[in-house]
Length: 299
Image (tube, rainbow, N blue to C red; front, side, top):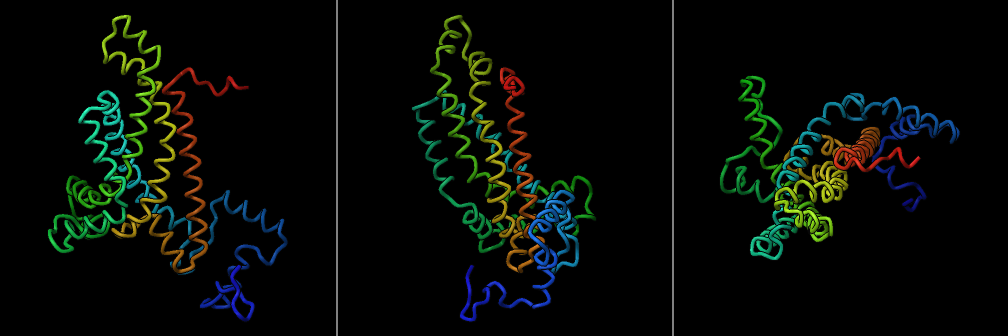
């Protein structure tokens, strides 16, 4: 703990003493440790995070309002990354060592080396009215007149606002998955059962998608939770701040800056809970891809 010359905690600087007392009461610092712990468990199980200090609203209501934005951004980015990375990784494995494999690896490595926030700033300068062209909106998830638009107009307006943020997250996110897919398929291609399938007269398409695909995809699926968690909890945070997308990442950032502790703890809890659920989905997907995996058989 960092203390000043008077022996007081530096984090107390600039805070109203009454606010500090409210914080101590909110988190049970006026109670014994065991009662404080039980209260915390009860509140977290019932999603009772208290009220925001600066927004005059319940924390859970703020999270419900902001969470769809973050999930939308994360899911679209993850979907596009997988739609690009898996076919590209398979193609690179088939064409291993060719010119296509070499120049595509160079492009992938270059995209991976560019930080998403730096690419976001560059795209804003180039295409969002920064200094050159004004093709895309600078900020926000939808336009001010969104409610006045037709259904198709609302879809286009939403897509128009999402293009630059999603590009930033996709460019820096598909390199790892592409190389993982390539290496997984390369490992399977050289195994004995593949040689046996080819010796029986099966064509390359049946061998690839009938035998290799399921085994190779296990490793790719194992990386899905980590990929989605990374997009939701790291990349989306910076992108939401830069593009002023009113999501959970921006909410948590502003709460940390303003010392809005109930919102900070509530956001961290929801992030952690989502991470656990995503990992559970990843484990269950194993069974769908490869029926030979049976978790109940371990008992």
